[in-house]
Picture 1 (cartoon, helix red, strand yellow):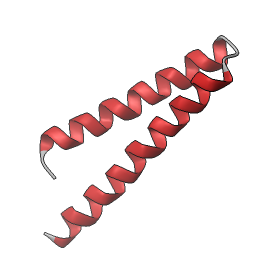
Picture 2: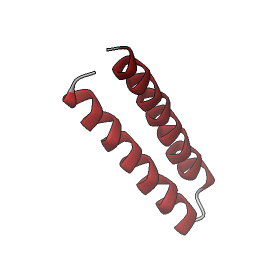
Picture 3: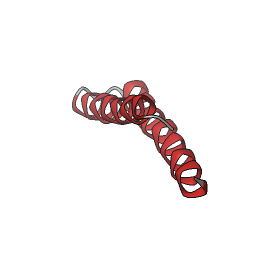
Picture 4: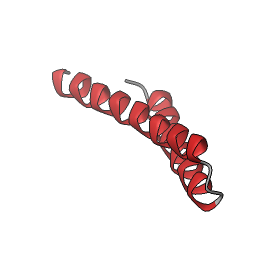
Length: 56
């Protein structure tokens, strides 16, 4: 994976954390769930990157 992909995944994770926090503060369960989903997607991508990096 390239550096660009790692940066995009980190940004997605940070955005997800922000969404989750805003959802908690505003008592918006939908936004909180979206934030958690974004973080989960970023985690899956990171795990995939780690596997690819380990094989190289």
